[in-house]
Length: 90
Image (tube, rainbow, N blue to C red; front, side, top):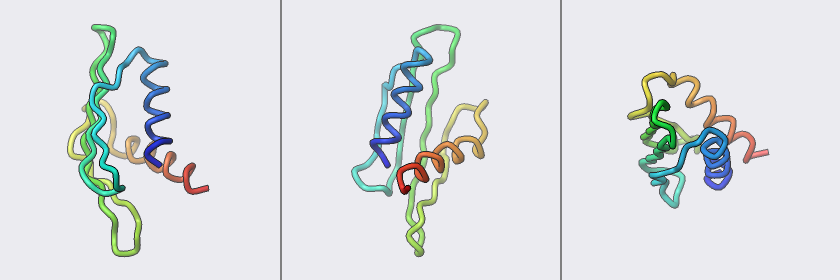
């Protein structure tokens, strides 16, 4: 899942003139994730995401968003992660 997520984030960054400046994703699924994209253009905001990822007792991943850009909703961020996760589990 992490390689698919890295690929999608890299593509988004390349397509939208961003650079990945922080990629702190633990080797295991669980832990604190921190991803930051910085814009090459001054008029675009930087995108900074921090999430705590845990496994539930029935082995599902849960994501608690700690920090993200104000203009992105929690629902849309979780929806994107779910899309990557579902794509990887097919």
